[in-house]
Image (cartoon, rainbow, N blue to C red; front, side, top):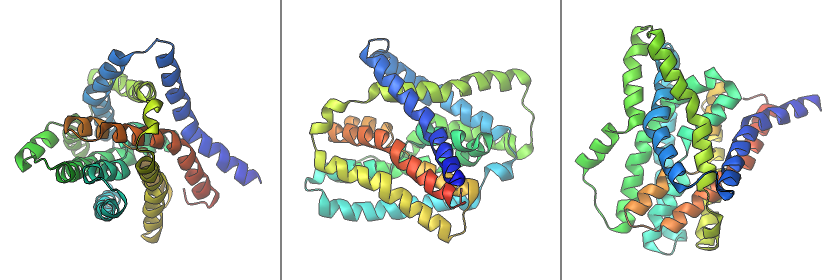
Length: 316
């Protein structure tokens, strides 16, 4: 009984703070202390400055061999690619409107790893979780972006050149932060105290600001539209995907922090960036927003349950 209570306490220590800050964002938006301009500006600040700083500081001060967990990263890449192929098959059979299939597929595989997934890992493992998740996040995010463009372009009948896609990836602030940090980590360079502390200030800003903006941006009024596709995508994203990733990880021998990262990253809700991309490409933005809202709230429950089960089994 004591072990179960300890596992339950650990589970809520991982997801509870996320829920509190998200709920605070919702409340502050409703009473007018936050507004759409704050959310837009805050999101840009997180994406372009704070999160890259967090990844840079985390990776640069870690030994390269500890940050570059090749097996974990390869698992994430191969698992995401296989999942994408399976979701394309599911969408053709279960999503009636062809133009909505890309929105559905992206909503099922594209996790909010940079904000909520990373926050889960930090809450669960502290610095060790941040180190294990940082490079995984950066590399798998590249694949997320490529696959999102492919599925949306195909379902919407649009086209984006390979060169433009590569240019977008090369300009991604998260990728830039990681690429700049890797040589520092590889060479064991000690950053000057001024650079390290300044970067840490921005890094510390990342998770609370990002979670506040995410909570403030949730729109529950849209949930009446496309409810069937929303619930189907939410079920796949929050239950099927983490279940498959964890089961495959167990079969391949992942345990401890590595298995925890797989659960927490795959169980994170759909990335907010998916809405931006769908809207920019002329897709069903309401469906994209629905999936984000449902998975953001549902992830608190499903991730808590997943952490509880793995912790009770002594695997995490």
